Length: 77
Image 1 (cartoon, rainbow, N blue to C red):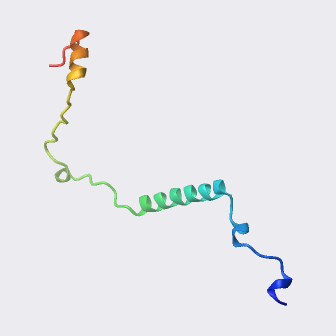
Image 2: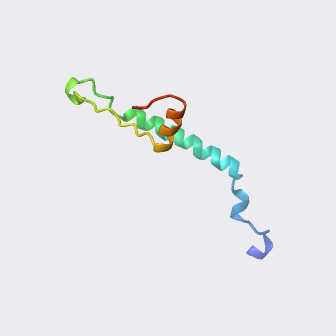
Image 3: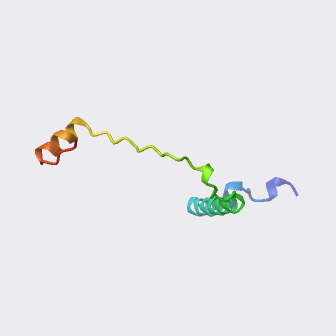
């Protein structure tokens, strides 16, 4: 038989809907995260693996926030 005797076969007719493909991608992503977590090394419990002093984060207060706080008598010194 020649191809002219068969109806056209289009590959995109076999594709799933975009919603089905997105759901498949999410399922694969969850599976891969679980596999990575299963083979990852556990966190250390050794004292020397943690710094003795952990610096505090600096909090910056903008001029506008300081003016509002001062107007409300919430002094941010």
